[in-house]
Length: 475
Image (tube, rainbow, N blue to C red; front, side, top):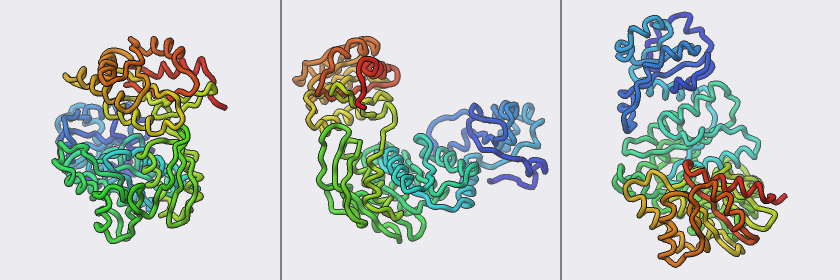
């Protein structure tokens, strides 16, 4: 840390530290609190205005903090309340930089392999699949917490190694949203041994200006690898494939449409939640039964498979691991009911892009389903054009081949109008999720494939709860 170690109280130097936190609300006795303020956020390229958490330092000590890291100028502003804790304060020029350097020091002491994953879409899924595959080989895997993939989230994850250094490797998600070399900064904290780039898409293009600039930003992961490391690259994305010459190590490519080292061949969708394909790798081939749907998820599985190959796994071992993948509850969870219908429970959250993506995934993997039914809640935070956005989403749902559309709450009624204007009149409107839950159970029948999706405020999980009350799941 950029701290004045010579000014450290001798008693503090010998103090037992349990962990490190940046949110005083989460602090527990025995932890060190990093008090962040606007100058640090600005220096480290975080957009927006942030609260000065120096004002929570006293409360942190009352909760049992061992020490607090603060900027000297912030201490001067809060001197009246903090002076009595002076012997427990560690002064830093930049508290975020100190937090990151601490994480880097913990990483160096741990000194085991890091797999880093980036991409415009699918990072979290690919990270989880990769961690799952590697864990199935007997390794203890540290993985990014939640979607913590920036200059604060990554150190929070890495600092878990200070509490438990027994992990065999780490699978870390690295994100970016600005042209400020965010991924290069993250690589300096934990230089990857294996770097995975999934795709380059027009996400954050308003900040970076072009797809080419996004590709350059993602390529920082390859350039930031350890010398001799392995790059895992999506051959189906030509901008990603072009990154193979940006390092001095090995390349492992994966893909479906373009010839690659790791491929999915003979892809079949027999029923939703059962994707079959042949996994071809440099370490042999194996048949895979993969419990997720959609081409994007197959590509994520191939990325995870390529990482498995880089750690010496066989195709058969990877196939066995992929068979046991399960989506998180409420996020694409697949429920097969004994009465002969299947429900996709994606009630965690919703927005126009995510809803259309899930409807497309449902349509692509419908297999022998007799009817494709969408139960979609109103989408919040869509601005002044919210009504038109809902209308256009309804038109798109109709175009994707849904057989029935049920809207839940508020502007979801506009989705029904859009669907009807594009030829889909079957379905209906429920004023809220409680009503939807009571009435939809009389609509569903054997052979149906049902997508239930909604924002948290709409609580479409009530539809799932009612279905589970009335019908039995397959044993």
